[in-house]
Length: 144
Image (cartoon, rainbow, N blue to C red; front, side, top):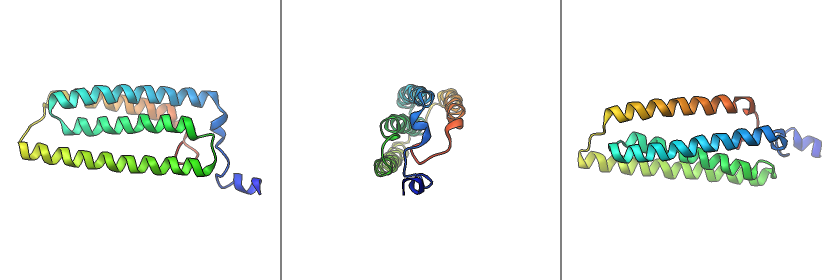
């Protein structure tokens, strides 16, 4: 039975045993947490809802990597619960962005384009770097 279960993802992923994978997750967490702070500050200063939305996405990613570090060696049930929590959290972030967008539209605020471009470019570089680090570990469940 355990052999059969392992073929369907019930067993913890093989990456759970890899110290290299843990280091990659910690690095991804650090990059995303840093970019959350940079984009949140820049978004608030520049009046950019787009930067705030991306900051929240970076926060979500950092939280996901932290949660993955906690659960990826656990049983399928706990990994599934973590994936559900991640999905619900991202939905809540989306509602925040919709609310902030409506407020900005009502207030008539216009964001600073230069800040948006510079920080957006930095965010692209950060996302590509994290994607490159994680590419080798793309197999597995929703927490991978």
